[in-house]
Amino acid sequence: MGGALHKGAQQIVAHENLVVHKMHQLCSKMHFYHRAISLGCNDRDQKPKNKGGEMKKSSSITRRHLLKSGSAAAAATAITSWTPHIARAAPPVQVLSSRYPALEYYADRIRKAVPGFPVEMQMMPFDKSLELITIALSSKSQSVDMVYATESTFRTFAKNGWIRPLDDLWAKYKQEFNLDDVAESVLDLFRYNGKLYVMPFTTLEMFFFYRKDLFDQAGKQPPQTIAEYHSLAKQFNTPMRAGTIKCLKTGDSVLNESHWYISALGEGWFDADFKPIFHHDKGIQAIEALKEVTAYAQPGYTAAANDECMIALQQDLAAMGPQWTSRALAMDDPNKSRVVGKFEWVPLPQGGGKISMDGYCISSFSKQSPDDLFRILATATSEESMRGAASLMVPPRKALLNDPELKAKYRYYPAALVALQTGKPVPLIPEWYAVGDSISRRIVQGITGQTSVKEALQTAAQEAEVFLRDRGYYRG
Image (tube, rainbow, N blue to C red; front, side, top):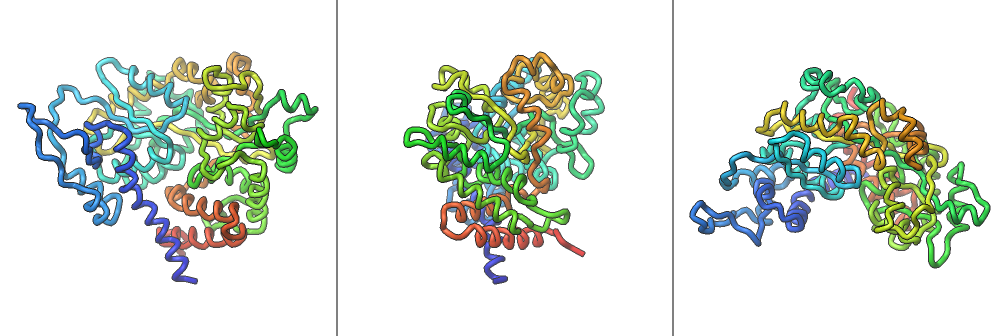
């Protein structure tokens, strides 16, 4: 058994190494040559030119070299040892970011924040952005100046010294940008070993989407318990419209859904010493309940992430389900939605839905002025800027959290504020996404019947404990 558990833990580590291969796939899709070359993308369609316009010899770094390197950090270091010289009078600020509607709004604000400082942002889905950001930071690349982070992912960056603390800059510019208005509860989630590392941009909450028109026709009220939710999903399930959405693509999507069930019906993921407890009886019952409701989910739910689930809701292919507050406004977009004005929102039944905070960090390896970078972030998160984003997320500034005008203007806002109070963040450890990816794979095995839920969770817990023990947990 011991050998098998170490093998499972090694598989978690192997996942970290897969980012090298996936980085190539990302780069082939993105076409941002000037940034990509120093991050390790061997662009086959473009070759650097010298000043006379002649083609330089392309890099000899190949996929085989990457695979031989043995780790993401080693691979990225090998790649960045070759960097062509590109003449540029004023290099733009380079930002790697996740992508969803609120961040797209802020991307425009960041680009325009400080005149004279051009900003180039590369945006992509969360899992892809995390992989590329990890590659860039672990290689100590100077080509990236700021990166996107959540209350969980930044801990890995801070632990490794990849991002700089912001405390000195926060104190320096506190009065100019009214930074005392940022909620302290949000800032606390962005501190590691007592130091602040992230400029908060959004608070994100999972809450409950439901078709009010269908509920009214059936004489039903929104569910108060998970059992009621399952009953309603069964009742509204038809061949033409799924009773509920389920987003169970391996990785972050599975963890989002499972977190609600583990929090509301189970005992949580870990105890106070970070020993796994999600495989205890209540945790097994929680994931069994999640498995049960997938009988009424849309086809292909194990390949669905947030975008796919939103399409199902917008195209009248599902009647209800948990989703992020940042997605609410899109339900009333006539260019994308066939159900404009038909959805309403309430907090997730029994609470415990995932809450997340995100923002941007400054790379420790950036050659740009930290003051300039901080001013860009502080300007983009002014009260005026966040007010403009309030239709897409709940702002982390106290003046806006308590603004009656916003509560009245946006239909989803009251439910989102309750979700912010009743939700729970994921375990706040740097290793969460590494170990969580393995847990998510085991959960999918249990839900799809490849193994029992009990066996899947027990195996996941054993692997997680071995992985965390190898990283210094449980000593003494």
